Image (cartoon, rainbow, N blue to C red; front, top):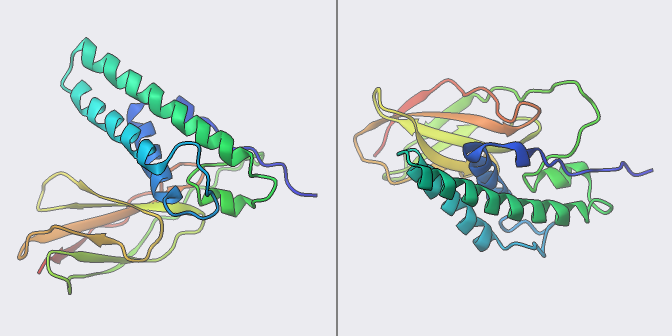
Length: 206
């Protein structure tokens, strides 16, 4: 008998920052994903809603009641869209496996209460063969749905390089030649949502 699969709606309880990150993951996972051909909200529209929330969050960080209200409204609008997509994926569960559903970026309701945190990624190397770019090399983490990559220079703050659906072709772009960058990566998924960050690795951009 096929397992009864339910799409988890935990994202509905996320704060604005968490929901923004979850939406980015869903966009990365669903873009060009042939398992979900007729999304009720297009990737373009979902991206617009995610960008609106991100911009509103940045504005709300400066303070002010109107900016906070606008950010909450942007969160609500994005949450509605994500719920619509969740309902669509739920309608496909009779024909999809759990592993196929995970490729959407969404979680399933797990009746097993045992926590299974993701393993910490290990960077295998950084390749600076391409001018102004670094190719990030690391191994696949079991049960990871995507990978978040960050970089920094010196003692500066970490900057986002993006969220990537696999370990292949993970590129950090638009770098300054002659500058040494520190790079780290963490996996997304599992019971704890994120793994620990990998140990940073330095490399000079060419």
